[in-house]
Length: 311
Image (cartoon, rainbow, N blue to C red; front, side, top):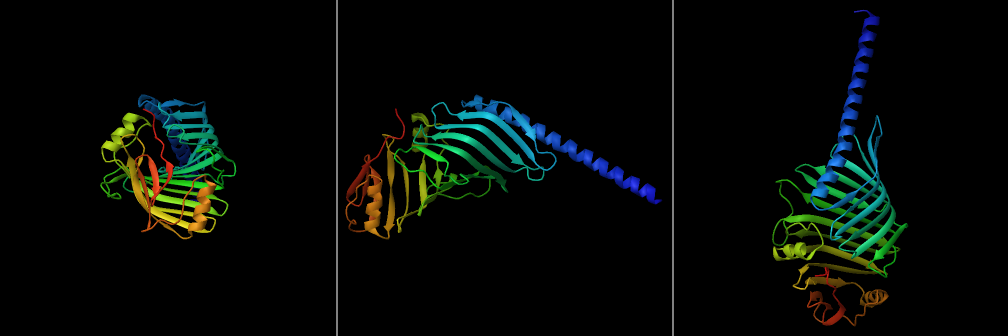
């Protein structure tokens, strides 16, 4: 075989490989673009309100980038209300189960405004692991551009992240106090030298919206939020807790937690900064009870509990 023939064979192979890769990239890209429209339609069928502007595909040849203008997703009862001027989905042909999501000029609310914030930029990672285990990590990427609209009176955060895990397959999942957890979570927030970290899980049927019927169904069918760990570092003191909670018949939080406080005087001052008054250390250990519409620390009523949903 002559050298010219070998060179021609190599070049032909490279051209065919390039054409094949290009065809695969555009096939996957256009399929992804179509999937966005299909998903939005399915969400509409499920009762969500979804709207968005044009979608643009780019990133060839290394990445798959789908840009969506003016997207808004919200449930009818505003259990979820998300809006962004621009949403970008990023992946690769060789990592179809891993996506990076970047959103700019974000406005979001949860639980009919129980939590609501505006953020210039938010990023998330969406990954499906072995056994159909879905893991989503949402990160503020530095939250100095954050405005916290609710709860009121809270100062902006320097940084925050939320990790969510859900098992969609038949593999063994984390078992909660009473049954298999439908969702696991880990939340971290930091402001100055103070930080809050919470990890736990949710058991019971899924909550599709923030309504009396949905929350009542969750509560009446074994719905439980388990706090495996809570660690609050405040002004040099460390407060830890673990416990569980659900909802009472008036849709107010109901539950209990065991607590430890490293320095009660600093803890008392930090609570005062939140406009909450506590006395001296309770006798017989530190236990927090949520019952009868009140948060009770030891033998002290600290504050009244709100109804989480209006009837």
